[in-house]
Amino acid sequence: QVQLVESGGGLVQTGGSLRLSCAASGSSLSSYAMGWYRQAPGKQRELVATVDSGGSINLTDSVKGRFTISRDNAKNTVYLQMNSLKPEDTAVYYCNAALRIFRSTVHYWGQGTQVTVSS
Image 1: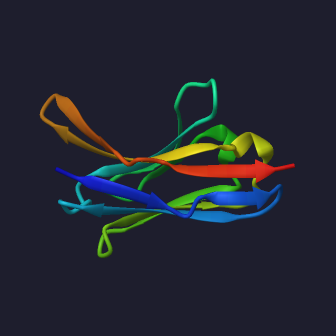
Image 2: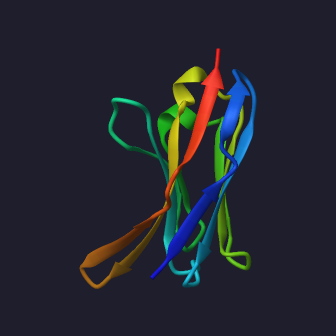
């Protein structure tokens, strides 16, 4: 069982920066694909960024050039550096850990952290 705890959210002005952290316990994250998702009010949860166990990164188009994702397996932590924030980035951000086991994938989620970007 993996427990994920996000931190680093808050209120920031347009153009500002925030760094989200996701600390894991219960298992080493080294074999997991890690991701950040977000959910704005009235909208579905969407993928923001992922980094797999080999370090390959995927970013959704709307955050390319502004956000970066990284992982520190020694600290069992994943980060989302968010720069040049826009009001449309306002959402609850969730950390996800995914592990493929045979033909299925096990997912773990954090409780979420609120990011609010004021205009």
